[in-house]
Length: 308
Length: 308
Image (cartoon, rainbow over all chains, first blue to last red):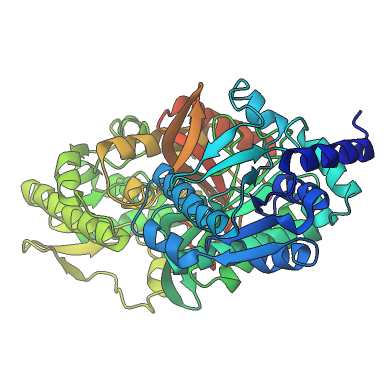
């Protein structure tokens, strides 16, 4: 069993030794891994760590505000609104693999700009054990990373030996709020992979609103701790509906709620019908562009957790 | 309460008087209304009634065979395979209203050809009370219908005063099999409205296979009598999945199962999770083009029963 306070103490000393008086930078997503890595390194080197939160315009409702409120008082924190840059590059793109690729490229471009501005020599990453065990240890610690524009940074991976549950224990010990520590995973490309087909600001907003309803009702039901992930997907399927007395043509939204241990497999548990009914009724009532709601019933495999 | 044997006796006499020795034709879909109308008129005028079953290529698995087996021994029955004609006209059409319109037009064209060939003077229809009450009685009995190509037929509507449950009682009394009498409604345009987006023979076949699995499992669970309709929709949304070890990109299928009294409103009842899981697992295993299955959870209103 990991002793979190021992781990924190040793880790901080190791980071101090590695980074010295140089500057470091981390891309803080608000997920538990990058959050724990940020506070650990910040304990070690203080404001010499810059934690950059990149808003790509594909975040959940209230997400940027929440991450800002949580970390601004505690870290040397910067929020970059790059949503226009991302959405411009994603215009007209339908293929999910292409979306992921573009988002990754724009993300590094934005991040490298910040790292150069800051004069950072070290790049902190929230890599955890399953990330490199799965790729057969190919990623080595303490090696250098060359960013596309030419910047070379030395990698710092303070939690690379930990598993997810250990990361959560360390996060709690360091005083991170439960909300961050027990957060459901949110994909890097954000809502881009939950809006099927071409992205438009309108479609992203529909997905965001539907997703907020799912999160609210799941929490009200007390299922936010037992579910691994719970979210809404805006499909590109249009369905006839009736609003008032008129025929209406709107989107199909799919609800996805899965249990999982490690994301390698996942299953849809038996869910309370009352909650599903409430979510469905609220989405069609509160999000006028949606006419039909369905609950995903596929496990992983043969499906994946995210739609894309 | 309707006395079915009195009704049948009076009805047959009325039909004999109206049609005399002339020839009549009916479009027999295999649904309960047109089936009951067909056997009633056939009892009255024998082989002077031609029952035409038009196969538009958008039928459920085994449907044409089943209707043929049931009615060929009993009626002057003709099955017209017009699937090529329908699919050609539907090529590239995405809009569901447009699909319905085209199918209606091609249907009448095929049917009129048969009526002319037959020398029919009368057109039998399975109109029931809600059909004309809803349109404020605008459709009158015993009036003439002019078909687009110029053929004028006198209308015979033997069950126009009956409600659905009375039609079923009359059908049973006349010895129609339970399978026909208690059949779930199937839309005239068939699978065309259950394949979202452009129709291709491949997509129709995927929908047909998924639908057959739904029907099989619902019957196995004994829910075929309590559910008003139960079917599969092939959406035009593509979802990433994993088959074996490879990433796969396939269709999202939506299961729709509703209770209803009169189709004006409908609701999704609490369904057995075991059955839903079996259907989902079977569809992704047996229909290789499908990677994800979701269960519709929307009532009518705000959604409709069919997707289009």
